[in-house]
Image 1: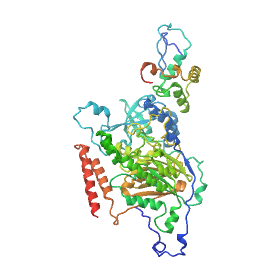
Image 2 (image 1 turned 90 degrees about the horizontal axis):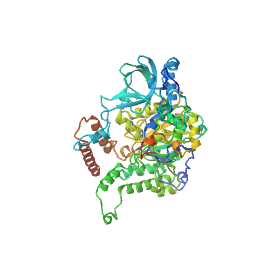
Image 3 (image 1 turned 180 degrees about the vertical axis):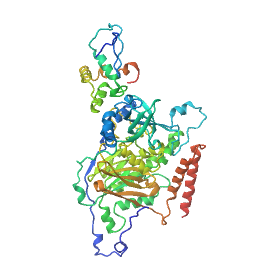
Image 4 (image 1 turned 45 degrees about the vertical axis):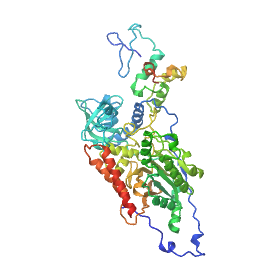
Length: 520
Length: 99
């Protein structure tokens, strides 16, 4: 059920203006808030792409090893662990009940492999795009730098993905398989107490999270965007709404501000070379979309600080961590000085509340490679695994770090979000030290026309969805329905003739629905 | 350090690989050359993969991860300078064209 922010009391809103009316002379000042940008660790200084990815896996395992040893000690008691925790998988002897620590790897038939594509005949189509790439023949394996063990027993292999670090209690069997009795992950990181908390008792402060604005698309709902801007800048609603909006201290745009349509068009354009005289008055779709984004941001930043994160569809680098979008693309918004362009895994402290999050690539990738369907559950799992992007670098492209893995969570956030999800979801998860984290799936604005409001209260932050719907009826957004239907068909489809067909079908459905909309 | 088994040959410790040097007499216990020390460091998988990373960076990474890398290795590398070939792992000499 979605909450709707209702308009102010009719008496103060829908009344005849009078010259003596105090409300029209009153101005509200936006609250200030402390802000600490911790995204520096995701900035890439040097770009060395010659390194292999083995280094990042080694660093990940060695860094997480102490956390996993503690988690194993907590779960299975000191007795088993002090005697039997193995430093190397190589040391696990057949028939001995012991605890081993390693990285999971899932052998998947349907995982896209460039080798398979090259080795088969050129006439065959490459694998059609599917929503889920799991199959019943997937096998889970634990490995470290010495050897690997296929796993069997008490371990939920459809829910797990490659790259997760795990501590396992069990026995190595003859034949090379490790029979698992119990398993545990590193768990939530501990909270740093140094984060200041005295600000929270004073005023109510709010942060607005929005993602998937989808500028430059043909079905972009301008009215919803205008309503959003008007609401944030205090031009919508009555006096109490304006008072409320003055306590909004920051807007976080969590990626995918540009629609993916423009990149598809750009690909089509590149394939046909044009003569220069034909392209004189032509401007690429992406450029137009970015100009629209600049106008949008300029309106927002005229009165509220904005943090801009890049997403999968934005003109930023493809590998994670995505570097900040260059501010030269937003000249008008940059001139106000309130626009901060930040990295894709996002980490800041706003008013004493630690925010960490991603633009959605992590959850989308895990969704493809595991049988989990609840995206909030996937997000909470990444917290339990203590790693924001476990599937990188296997299926999610990331920078080949040599001596660090910055995606391991060292401190516990208060608010942990991921952007560009199909619907709003939120939950609360508690760690073993009592640290509580608010988890949020931020919905994609172009599908749901809604944003997420977070009340800053440190560990007890609260969240609510705000919808900027423009249809007079309560009917759901037809575009969203079409997309969800396509996704469901993709999940259910077995062999399929090819992704091409379903994509064309989907587009035609959308065009059909758009025509309907115009008639209304 | 070399040690002898019952046949007088060199005993190989698990996890480390010694390259046989046929010019030296099998029974002699010679002080290891600096290059040998560095090569052993490269081949010891306790400190992670050694391909595509300089020895000094690999040593510092091992130090940060509390793996207790031998101090001797760092001393030798810094003595010759971090730009010298002493800082490149042994794979660099065998694979041409790739640093």
